[in-house]
Length: 215
Ligand SMILES: [Zn+2]
Image (cartoon, rainbow, N blue to C red; front, side, top):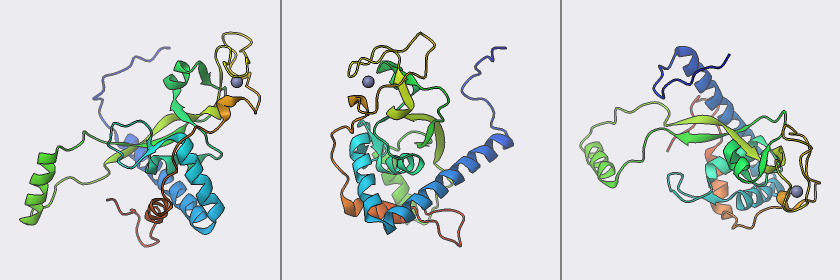
């Protein structure tokens, strides 16, 4: 039976809130574990810098520039390594590839709400200085499924690099050989080591607190 897609403003049930909180907790725990790994093993940290360079990264998560925020690059790498290049289901379709059978998507953080204007930021700062506190509480991001690494995709049409072609329209298992250029790291600049270390330290969960500090 086909389920009809409801409007965007469907009510949020307690069960949905629980699932959402659980996925944020899982993401934070994955980040904590990966941060511990990278902070204790210089080779892992360097591998992350290479992954971020290939994925494409940006410092400001709210900027319209292409690429993942460094935080999201870290979250993606925490879930899967090696990692070369990521995109959503439709991105891969646009690249002549599709998600391979049986693959589980990776998650990323998405911001809730629009970006504040400069005037709003100034006004908030003024109010804070006058002793007002923002009434906005709770997470300002959610965890979104639906991202896949290139290694989780297969050619949907003849691969331009290695000429591997799907056996038929429904074939989602025929894969390019491991040395196909589609799996090669993309050229990009590595994030500065000092910024990465700072970001990693910010992922460490305090044993006494449930919530990691939110900037
Ligand atoms: Zn190929």
